[in-house]
Image (cartoon, rainbow, N blue to C red; front, side):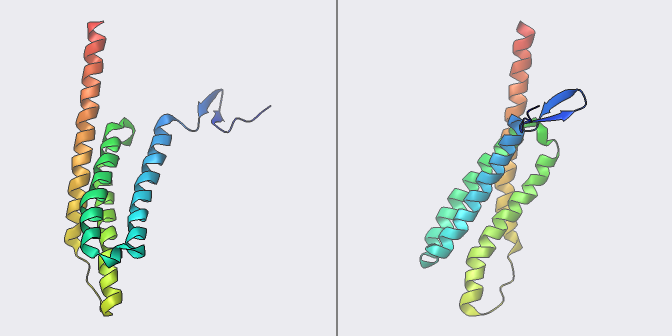
Amino acid sequence: MAIDPIRMETGKRTEPIFTVDKVLEMVLSIVYAGVWVMLLVWFWKSGKNDISAYEVTALKLILPIATVVVAALIGLSPKWGYFRWLMVLFFAFMYFLSSYLTLDLFDILKTHAIVVPDWHRLIPGAVWAAVGMAVGTVGRYLIRYFLKKEKDND
């Protein structure tokens, strides 16, 4: 009897281990984490030479766009439930960390002084994530509405 790594046997039925939703969740997590890590690497490799360009490009353009897109895709998925709104806090914390682990840490290493974290940097990440979640949630409800409307017309 061959074992299928994609399926898991539970009782009499065979259920897939990897569904499209699970793969999409993994891909979203990997993509966002990849963008986040690449921005940190970019800063420490070359961005610290031009801090204002890094701040505008990474913290005001790339990371907010990635946050909105990933949050919107999470908002589209019905599998996340109310947990999706807790993800707003996750995105806010990641945005805060991206700033703290680059700009603030650079100041700490340069001046040898403790820099108190600016907790107000949580706000932009939360706002961008909430916008993405709202777009995704509205999109999910619109898709559901039009599918129901189409089903009723048949």
